[in-house]
Length: 454
View (cartoon, rainbow, N blue to C red):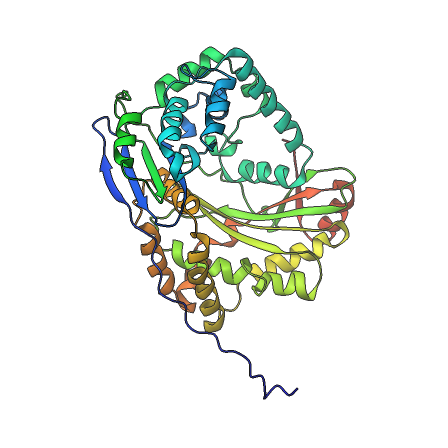
């Protein structure tokens, strides 16, 4: 059958979409409440954002915020041990969370018909965890085992190495969010209980409710959290200090930070630098530029390294804003024998000798705009994004503001923002792989190799 009889279907422009806006209020104890009423979303997500930046951890106990979070649902004063597990299961509720540089965030997912029984349990976990000795010790041991796995996993090692290269040792961001072995090992139940008492508080916190909320949801919140006592004093968020590590040697050679994994058959490549936070007017054009450079299979890096050269299954360019700073990173995994050629090509393409074209940027803008309705198609996804914004000090209308700015990005503004941030002196190269194989080829290609030890 001829193609004329079956003409290629035409695509139409995406329907305008906006991130939903919540009803906002505050309880007398300082807890903000963002309520997203989403009819038809029958799994409700309740997410609590606690104003606990990791800079509040003392250096000798880094990781205590993670242990406090992970142990919080092992039992409460009202429901010790297994009884809490049984109560959550009876409500069809699932608890989760994590401690990040900006905040501790925890949440519960539950059918809307069971919110009445699950929300008080969520409040118990937050307000009165028991932190029994056996539970704390078990989670300390689990974190130590997690670190052992990290130390034999090349992508995880690459992430640690990038932190070390980008941020000064005085900054908490230079070390893993969950702490290292020496500091985690020092965590005890009494110390965790003290950390919880000082820092898990309603003032400065935000509770996000999203889903098909039942009648009386506000009253449920008031009952569960209204008498939660506050502790005076706001958390201090600290701007991380860049490490100031040079990207080139005095004689002009590119420095490669190499972490040795003997016998590795592939190399983890990372090229990263300090970026911007969401307050910067460069954030939107940088995100669009990153998509055109390495954020899609049709991007410049993927076209060459994946499609033409076959060096890798894919290259990814990520822009990661934080509350008071940000980073960007290009990542790829390549075969050991093609590492130097792959790195050469990566850096050559990243130099952006020619501006992004109008078509490249239009495609990148369409991708960013078009994926938003899919990215936020569940109550959990909306609550997660709202929580991220709250942790970063932003209001929930930021998503719509950002998408408006994305829609205004053109080839010139994307190229300008990219060159201003992804500069030669802000491109730090980290490789994780077999040093015996990599050093000769890198040095022969004119790189200066700097060995790393974590």
